Length: 358
Image 1 (cartoon, rainbow, N blue to C red):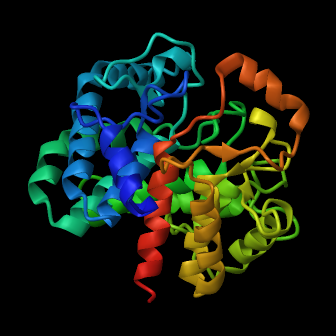
Image 2: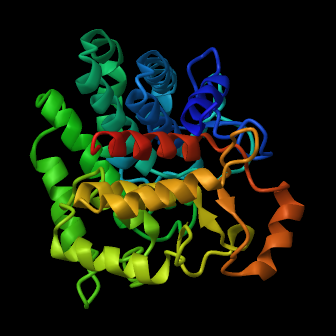
């Protein structure tokens, strides 16, 4: 079985009957479904032609959000009364596979997943012309837009579930892209000025003095999630000078020569290994830039990280940035997540995008 086929099979095996995708079926902390991970997994399945699987996820997401409408209404009511919500008031970043809110402590106030599910839903509908799905989940779309409208400028945890006190360009880009996609699909649901306000704010606040995007406002380091600003979120184009400067720094600081991509230079999670999904993501950016030879090399590196039974991990640990932290995390949560469904999804996305270039 090829890695492409085993990726599809592993994702299918990790999809619950509810439609939710488990982040990892074997890792101690990842037995939940994230909207962020799930939307990327669904997009990977759409790229592989597995549209029924993607549809089941978006149906689950819509059903789950409507089930927690009261939480949204309470947050909006507090904001209207000028009361700052507690972190426990907000929608979570992950749900149980049945669509419930978990009881474990987690870094829950994140917004990028809510932008990403909107982006992925519209991408699925546009790819499949599944108008019936759109109509069935429109109430959840409307609810999500109402939730994000007063919150988009908030400091939140980032996509790595860190730095609650900061505002993150990759989160802003996800919100811009998701709200733009909904506006494109149905202008009545999102006023055009909302995503454009997010774009303007990002460009005004997130550029370092030397012209690259910052990891978060006030931190001039780069983070590999900044790749998302151009691909696929489109807050800027791949040939934008600010993105090009950011890409050059990611290549310089976070791409190991002949290897994979690190999240950011100060990463200590499991010692800071090379992330499979980010390596595939850089390859996706290269495809968009026409750098297909480099993209194929990264696809090959990604495939080489698979286990004998075709499972891709979250990260690999042979060349850690901060190896002194590895044992601490292993003692806390066990070995690195493998398989990680998001890693498999990004392999499918990169492989599919390269197939189009042949």
